Length: 397
Image (cartoon, rainbow, N blue to C red):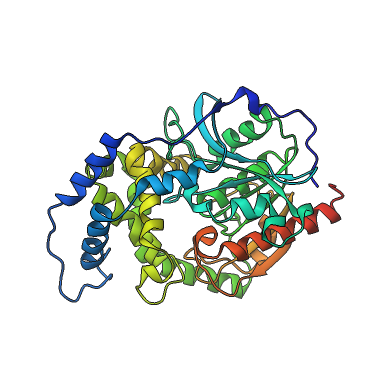
């Protein structure tokens, strides 16, 4: 597979274990229990935002049944570390794969995600033989908390996805010693992977993404591409509110959110409901309450809702969605996994191929924006298939 030419420096990193104080957990429960519920139109459903009746049901479960320690233990089942990377105290999972030459794989979450998204994909990726697969497909999985998210420290000011890509490449190369690796991601992770592949092709030898958020400066060319853009703009009208707020005035939003676990939950759960391949508005047709709450709790107990939202501000400062004003493409091999209910609908392949060196294109039978949580088996198999293909054709083994 992709060779590692230098010794790992993991021994220089500090082992990390998630251990949230009981006092913090108790304070969260008290705030949820004391939340002052307010009005919602009787016919509101989810049309006005996160449904009131569902939030009351979730809050009751949160207070009386949810067990953070259970899920903390699941996260701690993976080796975790902290290391200073470009001045930021970075947290990451580092699961060394089976066999003699597992491929280094950087897998990155976005917003409103956390490393908890990857609980069902890390072990199958690292140890395929445990799940009926071939050990030759093994990856060493590196899954960081993005700067300002969860268990990682914050950047000195808002960083956009391109700057975060620089930090993560430094983690892989300068800290961990991987001269060659594959980058994968959805949501912001897909954007970050795109910039890593664009800016650091000497290290990142391929990318696999389940979203394309970067754009070509020349815009759509064919009628199919122009129709995609028209429909995309229509679809995003009801999705732009949170994005605009976080890209322009994230600090104002944070004053309400930092002291309200229910507020954070409502803000995030709306996205899990509207961006996923749900049965109607039944968010639990895809996720359990525990899955939703664990992801939310990471924002709440680490007090990172504010700094996590900075990435939107950072992208605006970096220049928005355009990958390269000159129209230069990503040259490393690119694998694309298209989940049908992705809220940020993929452009036609002709458009994608002007941005990426597309070597793998999979139209998934089901699934939405949070591929690693919604359809972990589909995503794992697609990453494996892409890696087999590019390692063979690019002679990287």
